[in-house]
Image (cartoon, rainbow, N blue to C red; front, top):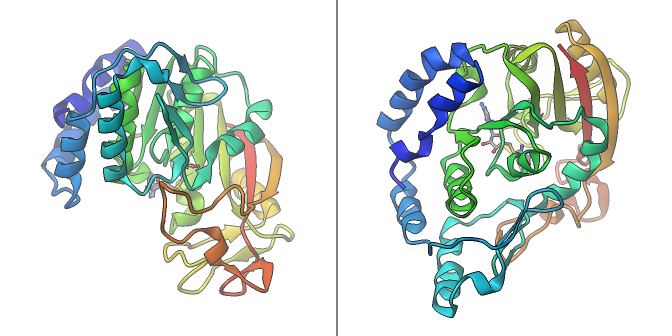
Length: 324
Ligand SMILES: C[S@@+](CC[C@H](N)C(=O)[O-])C[C@H]1O[C@@H](n2cnc3c(N)ncnc32)[C@H](O)[C@@H]1O
């Protein structure tokens, strides 16, 4: 797939869904992205995508899982080719994906996060949805499975863009797009019914600006679904870790759920609800054949799993819902 094909149909979709502010500015932003220097492996990833077998999946389930095709949809040779190509895009972090005969078992059981939040959000049927920091798009496919009308993800990590392309190669839906841009570069649209942002807030140096940026993408009354790491404590508790948290370098602010609710209130959100708090388990985030680097077990204190290796509270993830 050429770089231009990445965005084919996107501008027409923006027009059809009256996302006017983006329509004015997005072509220039994406043109600029195409001129930027790429990750050293980007060309190889594109070659991998070009070599994927062509198939018409006889099965597509996006509602209960992301399951694409039956084993019989590919010849034996095509199956072997696919098995050889997918490791070129490792590490596979978010999933799992069932792809023909392959169980692409990712580092994260991202489906568990989806199951935790789904009962609490407004129905997505017929909605315009944005997923900020969407990773490889696993949850975007699940949004489509809930019959969203138009799904856009934004994530600047090029490997994840390529992993999304693999799924789109087989699924071929024209109302879903991953754009390779950071939230801070997105023009205000005031257009989406629901904005998700999961696992991103703690990576932002300026979390209040980040919440304002998410709000600027919502139409009035629209719903924010925010998921992030929290610490135990009252509305005054916020952890600003040292150089690393759970071995991650780029972690800036980890508030308590109550502090985060207060931030949302200060940003002008309404109907703020904390709908879930779950400690991340060693079953939800772990090494697999498809992600062979260190994972949660290596990030926690081996003698006390309630602490990170640096001695901070181990990750608890909260889901908050609020309206603009
Ligand atoms: C922990 S992952 C979360 C992925 C997915 N949302 C999930 O919940 O499984 C964080 C994602 O945020 C993305 N990210 C980092 N900085 C970002 C930014 N400025 N704007 C949008 N996404 C960003 C990263 O590339 C990464 O894919």
